Length: 452
Ligand SMILES: Cc1ncc(COP(=O)(O)O)c(C=O)c1O
Image (cartoon, rainbow, N blue to C red; front, top):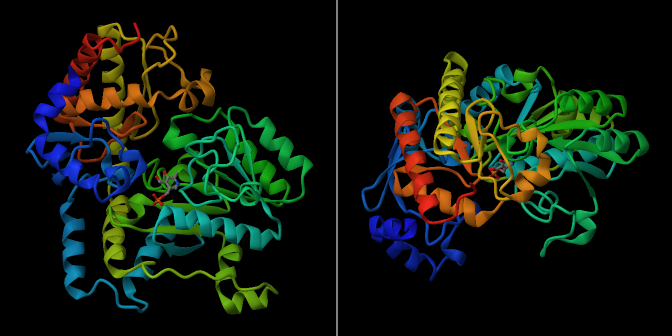
């Protein structure tokens, strides 16, 4: 049994989890780290690997929730952080690093005429919506089912749960009502909403499709949104927390050649430390500037945050983005990810398992076919299943079994299930991952939980 093997390899993690449950709700600090019977407890990491407290090594595709384009402990980033920690982690003052960090964002991200840093992606999406409402003077936000923009109240319904638009516990119904939650399997509902209403401030979208492309967008969707939002004076917000500096140096907008009005950034932005930003049109961001706001006849928009652009995160972010700018990390990670996706498909075919593998650029998504559909892994097309068939059909128990089976064989994936390939992953890690995937599938078969 997979679980018996897992327990036998990870007694140290089991012990820590038992202690965690006496102090942390669910023993956890992030919902997406839920693992049954318990999560691994990691002690250190390097490049594409991490090690748990029992000394087991894993090829890591959780990738700091997507923040680590260069893998763990990339020496120039470590050095920048070490140097900065000794100089001060928070000066409570303006500093050169924040200017240099914003400048590299401005050079890389097409929409970034101006940049305002925050402490996380959640904060950045919150600020982007505030700026959009103030700029347009309109109240409503168009969002898409399953698109995740952080955990704040305005974007919680329909992001990771309540896909039917119902209101999650703890969220005021009145606030939930300020968002129009639309399907993204087809652009028509969004286009019709934009045409027929005059109270919409912004449309916010994950340009990869929901959850880093677990539900890809149909061709032409983003172009249609761009044209319609422009026509109706509505701001288009790309949430590039995942895709920023990954889909290309300049994110999804540079890859697709579609420039939004505002961009929400985090993860790779801060080089593996906490940090986020809103980047975008000068006119919109200038609402944060008292003089510019006054000159434009607008009220200045408030925005604080103790850790915005603190020197430590700025040092890590600047070191990372400078490497993104000068090197080919995005392309290398993408090439490796494509080899991995092809290899995973090959293993599915060879093992006779009717699952799918897909994903764009340097991510991969595994579709473990919870509904036991007749799928040919060699030609699987996620677009045919849409939201309901993909993210909407997720079977958390099956995903967990796959994840644990892979952990037993030395590979850690994210819950999608899928993961993030870094520029530090190479042929050796791919070969090891494919072996682990084959072994995991055989173990799942033996445990009787595999569609066939
Ligand atoms: C697309 C997207 N937007 C926003 C967020 C929230 O970012 P953070 O976790 O930094 O608050 C995430 C986090 O995973 C994300 O994937």
